[in-house]
Image (cartoon, rainbow, N blue to C red; front, side, top):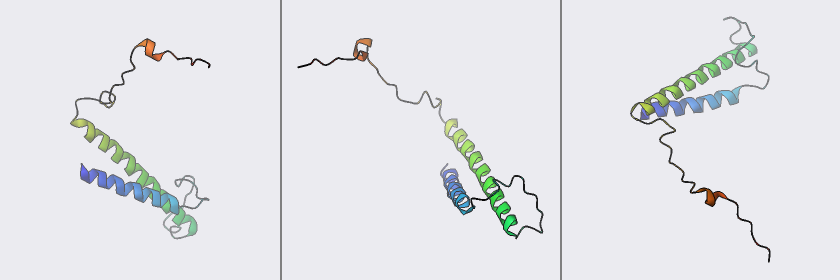
Length: 103
């Protein structure tokens, strides 16, 4: 479990770094750009590579999040909502608003 959390943290830091490295004029996750091996080192090709790395890292991050959720819930016999502490609101008379008296 600890190993999975460390991998998740590394993916989160890597995802933040990759997003910050991208320029504002990027095409957005590599959509709409063609290019092949020949254009890999051009300005557009490197942006496309950076976008693809970001998308791949984000996908891994989401998969790891699901895996961590499943592994955390396997050992528990309650779901998340049942494990929350209960809130005691009292009776209905406690919920009525009190109007202060004027002096």
